[in-house]
Image 1: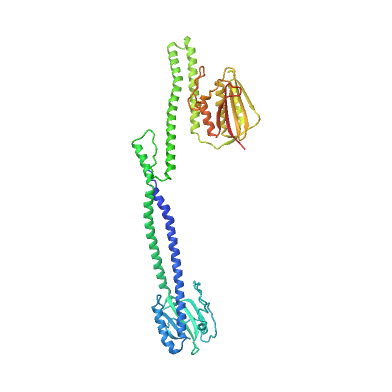
Image 2: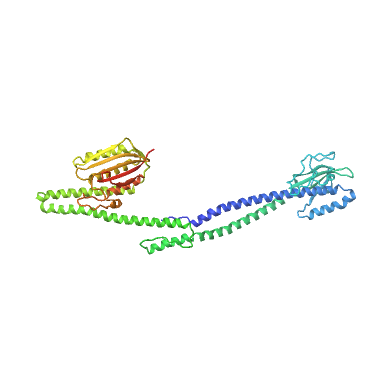
Length: 496
């Protein structure tokens, strides 16, 4: 069953378009709110301006009023925003306009002076801040206004309406009249909804065009990675000995880290494969020798019999071959475990106590080999690492110092406290390692060519370095102050 992977191009489109869609929705909402608010403010200004204009026209003498009032109404109906609902009431009697547009309940003909039971309509100041008196530029026009123009919500012919009302006492007869102009609110809502729908439709169109452009742009931007994928696919069908991704001149710089990391990985894999090949070849060679010895002497035993003079020597050689093979297998297992074991968190441990126990164990095991083992330390030294790996590292170093020492030689194990580090030092009196060979001995299965050297696998020091690297420690080779032998220095991180 093949796993379905998500498209990077689709993911990038969603990552770009989702915030863009939210932004378009936000802008559409803000635009709709601004348009609605502006339109309502415009309607209120038109209503208040219209009621003041009609109020001034109705305050003229009767002969003038009869001429200009119809003209004013005609102009109000013909303007950009027509106003067709108006009324003029004296008491409960309609003098002009639509009788259904009744005056407010608190209107009475007995009022005198300025009452202003309702706050006069006010609007945000414009760039031209003209001084006004109760809504009129000429203060004389406001003298007979009892209730300055104000706005209220009401119902006209069963439909919600916005009503502007002004109450004025006429100059000629002193009558108190209520002048009103209204406009239906639902018409305004339909207009606002239609305008908002137009904004939403334009936003959807913008999103569609933007999505198409983003899709094309992302596809164009991903072409370099498609070209890199094509290189890998071609290499699968026709593999080269050393495959590397090739950067083209038109590729963006964002592809450079990926290509460099990929090529670095390929280099590392080639080194690992080469190391594995060499490791397998060397391991098989190292195991072939003791196996051949065991096979030859087993053949001698089979032909000569267990009581023949050669049997004792053959059994000794077989034992030695088996022990050599066992040592080699243990070192191979230790090396494999070092490579594969996950890195555990570093622990605080007493390097002096650990090295002292390992030294005592090795001294007890090698009492008959004629090697003196000395241990020195100034006191407890706290180090950071893995106690198990550190114990194995110290054991390998002491084993090497014993194995490659001269007869009757001395192995010195010392613990030193250095600035920022805890140091383990293992010295021997053997032939040592020439400086020209000290870098090569870290390679697996490499052995210094020396006449009379004890048999070995060439894995001791590589295991030591691998163990040290897993704990963040360093290993260095040097010559002891005596000028004879080998000095191995391991610096662990010091525990605070």
